[in-house]
Length: 270
Ligand code: HPA
Image (cartoon, rainbow, N blue to C red):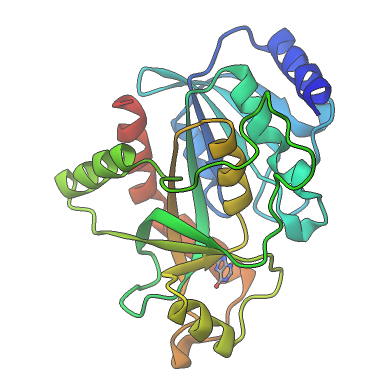
């Protein structure tokens, strides 16, 4: 694993010499955030040794390097989901590569279904904690002690100091923001009515098919994480239960400017 990461990192460094300090993962329908980056280099996933290739609609599949808010950043336009058939090791491979490229903070976005009954389509939710709902833990197997400990602490996977900064930015810009618990599921089916209800009863405020494995890998590596969901559907409501991927993408695109503003200012303040 370390050898593969080093090969991927060496290749990337041969194409882009600067060291990014912030890594950004963009969720479904949230890819136009990269337009905010003053781009210096782009590298397709398919060119990077050992990188899986993205298959899902709405994800373009490249690393974008450049300047944002006075920082050198690297953004993943397109991520790898377990439901696409990748192993957990593949899902978190890019996170490890970003860490070895030198990032000091990881900022993640995703599209998620609302479980909290007060949430509406287009709302933003800062993830304050997560529940892994049968998503396979990416740290199963022999521990790579160079990455981190065998039994990582998960008491603060989403850094409170970053959450506080983001909340302040939202308030200053009159953006209504929620804070809640993200439930990670494998998908690819959206939840049944009964599953939405169950996940809500278990303490979830939103549900989605990404993020949890990436965050576990980041915590293992000692990487501070900030993550935010765009609520793209509210399956918990009896009258609004039918969900399509197209609606999810559309809702994400519409809410994106708010998310973009918060990410941009947060990164500038890091
Ligand atoms: N469930 C799971 N994943 C999702 C949803 C949902 O309702 N919306 C967007 N991603």
